[in-house]
Image (cartoon, rainbow, N blue to C red; front, side, top):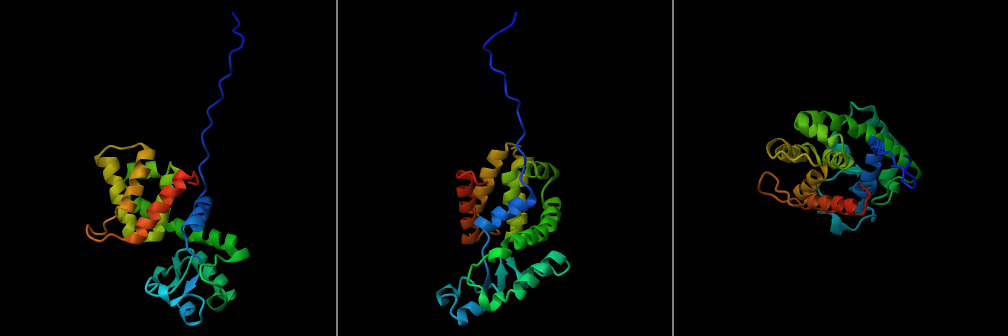
Length: 215
């Protein structure tokens, strides 16, 4: 017997995951700072009231620190700073400027700089089961990409938390895990003692990006 009026079920299509470049672009847009150099305090481009906040920063752009990262064996790193030097950013770019027409090219280079660290640190610090879960979820990937920018200490810190949730507590729900990663950022205790406000701010920003559906 032919059944009439029945609706044809739509095929379930798997959501395409974001590329690494897309993830980096979102990070730079919403979490990564623009250009900064200490010279800005002496030539009037930046109010001296921010001097304490930037006391440990030398020259930074898109969350990359030229002095402290020391990634000279990566051609993308060298090209990134060559472009900035050729643009005479040190004397001409305003504070927090992303690069104007150069921004897409610089973002692409940031992706090439971060990717080797991300893949290496994920294998080193995440358990096999945690790594499998992280690399299957856009939000968790975004969280751990941002952890690369935070530094190897913080990457290890968040990896340890992820491993406990997955391997010891048996949590595999990606949404729950991402919420817990955000909570770890907001309620962080560095070395069990120090709360870092900058990490908390990053957690609150990620939480807002999730609520808005940006990530």
